[in-house]
Length: 263
Image 1 (cartoon, rainbow, N blue to C red):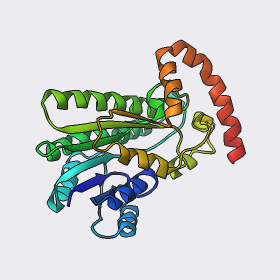
Image 2: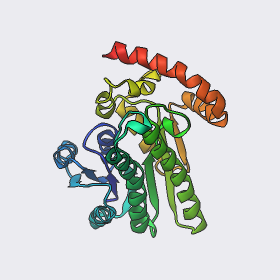
Image 3: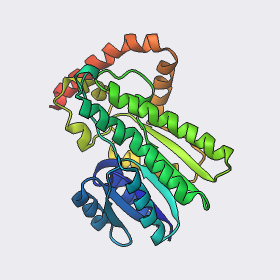
Image 4: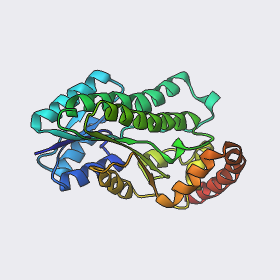
């Protein structure tokens, strides 16, 4: 049986992705910093799913996870989903918060991708990296978070170039969803600097994003923007940064209003 690894699968998008992969016939290794949450997901999925505690900031731990997955069967799918969200002005972040965001959201993806390539290079497979709609433009209040997601997008595309150049049959995918109704987002709801997240026309459900994550597996699709209708807007804004910055206050005011209503 082919195996799959999903990081940050203790809740939200990661849990829903693990559920769909298990339903699709994979033996899923569920990982999370919170071991109890990872265990809960694995128990919900049943055999042959299993769990490991996994700090994605630790490069060696990724290799251990990859080895554990390969022991059960060919490792064919690796989902770099784990991440954290902090919302505040760039200068108000503590040094520890900045380091945590970069280590978890970007370096965690990089370490995971390297471990996955090492484990999958002979037989091929798919690496799916969780980026964000914030990968494409200005996101005041989320500048450090957004920077990590810009990095994930750029890394994913460049990694595919390296794989193609080396003729390694692995496909990479950057998933760029709009705001998602997850615990991670709800935990920031009271913060004014989170307002830009709430400017989305509607919050996506975790299972909607998970469906798109699973849909790219086996396809040559380096970027998936969810929903597609927002893709044209955000990519157009990325081409005209001056216009984008002038529009940002409008989005933030809309987000502040919706955030207040949600509270």
